[in-house]
Amino acid sequence: MAAALAEADDQGAPAVFLEGAPGYYGSRGFTTASAHSLGRPSARIPDPAFQVAFCAASARWMIGAVVYPQAFWETDTVGLRDPQLSRIEEQISN
Image (cartoon, rainbow, N blue to C red; front, side, top):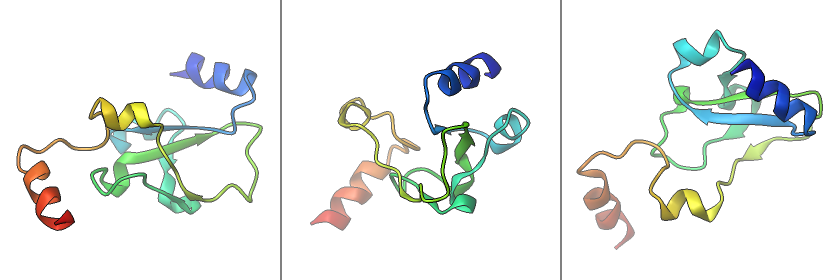
C-alpha cells in the first residue's frame, strides 16, 4: 500500500480512493472520504468504507461527489453486490 501511495504521489495524483475496511486501511493512511466533503459515487458503498488518502497535489477546493469511470459500472465493481440489490434498484428506478 505504501508503494502504491508513493507512486500516486510521484505521478501528481491529488488523492487515492478505495472501498474497503476502515480498520485495515485506516492504519495505512486512509480516512473516511465524507469527513473531507467527498461524496461516494454510489449509495451501494457504505459511507465508512469509501476512503481517501491525500497526496501532495491535493488542494482544499477539491470537494464534492467522486465520479467513477464507466468501466467500474460495466464490470459491476462498485460497492456491495447483495443478491437482492439489483431487484431493489430496479423497483426504485421504475
